[in-house]
Image 1 (tube, one colour):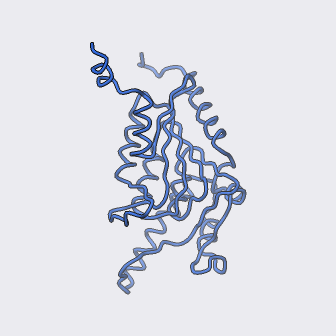
Image 2 (cartoon, one colour):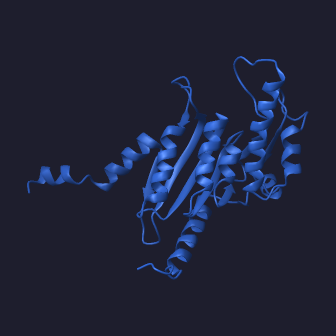
Image 3 (tube, helix red, strand yellow):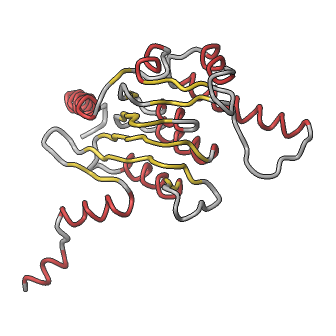
Length: 239
């Protein structure tokens, strides 16, 4: 086979990785210890409406099929989620978080810079959550931009959305409902809002995040979980 046909038939791994990083903000790293997919969630979580082109965004329609593919792929053993987000669309963020929480493969989240607003559920959705000591997380009530109809139904709707967030966070972390609600409703800390900003150590002490850590810690956790899975005997009926 001519050399140019061989190159066209099989794209080199480094070219594929480059395109994956540029197009989707993700990469799959393969080694003898296991194949780990790295997914970045950065900027603002974009929902059903397009944000201006000069905004750094994470599009949920890109992330959701990636998560489904990662869960199903026999070539991927674990998922590393790098978070540096200011928040964004509540529905889109919760949808991504629910998918992460429902994965069977080892998952670890690492908050770097910030995991604010809807970034909080995204951080706790992984089986292990980590945060850099310098990273911050903003916890506040649900907010809505645009026209708001001033009727009781609107406030009831806000309350139901907020309850979904509180329940998800407390179900997927060690923080108590009372503590999380207290942080969410605190006054006098944010200049123009209700809520709280907590940093790495406080996030761990409160039970919101599992542990302090960096990139090597997150990867070490994944490799450990992958090794444990490889040692498990096959289920009855498996070949």
